[in-house]
Image 1 (tube, rainbow, N blue to C red):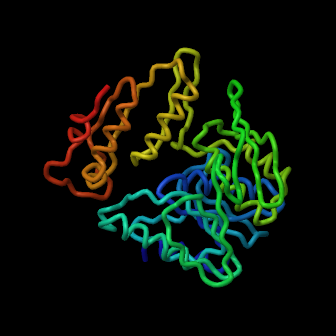
Image 2: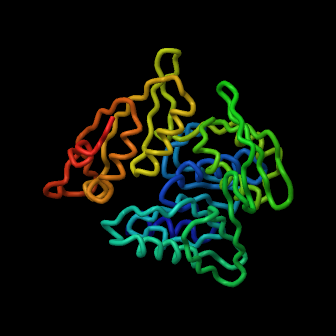
Length: 315
């Protein structure tokens, strides 16, 4: 059996909290699991990265029937799941080697929403072009940053080395929340994770303490060196939208620094489909070191190389 099928089987008897989306699902899953683990609610979790808090991607509980699951859309893997609650963070086109068109990609997410069990809910980023297919009895919530939504963050404030925001829920506001990984791109992920935790009984003070003590995910905006003369960040951004979020976050945090990016394109098909978009985003850098394509599961495609990106970059 494929891993996705086994994951569907082993999580079927629990209340799955399934986080899906083109971007943000690993960090949002990790945040959700941490918020629940650090509260009286607890959870198990199957995660798509290594937690810097727990140094593993697997968390188990004897006391909770909640299971946090990173719901991967590649090869329609997330269709094996039966979520109790779900988050959709983004639906920018990706994996077009599997789906062919953005429309088919969106349809796959729509089918995912139809799998949510009656009595559960969907927490969807405000403004997504997604036609949900919710079963009767499934509630819909929206979330976002500085927008009108059921769960939202406002008044984002920076202090040296710190980031704060106000977290709004349908029942109240939690002010001056400190984000443990003080990067603006993580505020949106935090709102989605805090929404799920709130809906499952995590208290306001547990939310505040949990999000402040979150230490991030290995290779997701992972700060490895931080000196006055040098900052080194490892990030798995492999889609143009993720790259843009990462680069703009770095420039916001370090406005007086020169930013050099070392980028390795991931997959021949993704390079072929998004060469123009990659070139535009990488042009935001001051300097670029571009590596050959990492093929992962793919055989080479004639004519598809990192040069497709490089020849369109303007620094």
